[in-house]
Length: 319
Ligand code: CP
Ligand code: NVA
Image (cartoon, rainbow, N blue to C red):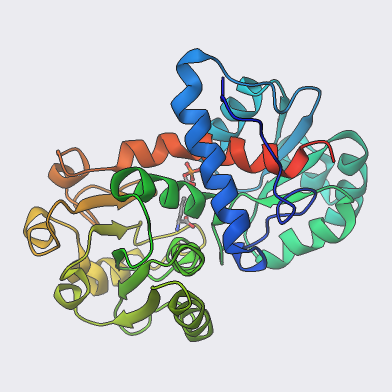
């Protein structure tokens, strides 16, 4: 069990996690500290930080990692996870998000939602009366970003000034990486072609916010420019949920941004490859990199469990 007494951070306690932009660097650091402590101490046992807490998880889109990492983390910390999909709920027959939120909020201490439009998450949050966690929207994937930051901290220690290159589609995962990067002082350089860039407003915010702690964010065209000096190369699928029907164009436009061993060789010494998964080996990353010695992808996947368990522990700790 964790040796030090656990002190919930006021920036996280009792609050929803919709995007990390609404949270402080100190709150994020507190979650990452607890995530590391839970991971380090797991052989000795998991502390019952979520005892008597029920967390409802609604998946309006498919998920492997987010689903199993939340359930696993919640149950290890002594809580109960209720996994729901619209097909099993009246939500699938037209009951509103507002009414669903009001009912679940009476029976669960927190609600995790994976959905499409971010507005649906905001609607749930407006009516739930309990903290709501973003389990992925088209626009953001903050839980992934927490695990990404944990993985980079494990490998490289202090994240301030750490250069991370993101390659390919400037999607929800890229946006959340830029945001967590800004809060932890990373220098995130995204190489994305025209038409695949993250929103300029997010990049400008991340650049200005990151600069306060030795980091920044920018977007370039050239993958070689992005990876020079980078300690990690990060990519995600070229076809996110909601992008169906555009596969052919995406494969053509994004092919120069594939992570392979040659691109990793151009990065900084000891650089690792990251991918939020699910991967499409041969598209955005080669099989050899994904499963090779420079892959940190499987640690990254495991860290979803630790990071989210830590997040919920801070969020739901008795006040
Ligand atoms: N990375 C991630 O969120 O994976 P799932 O879609 O399997 O949850
Ligand atoms: N960008 C991907 C992430 C999947 C975990 C998507 O939104 O489908």
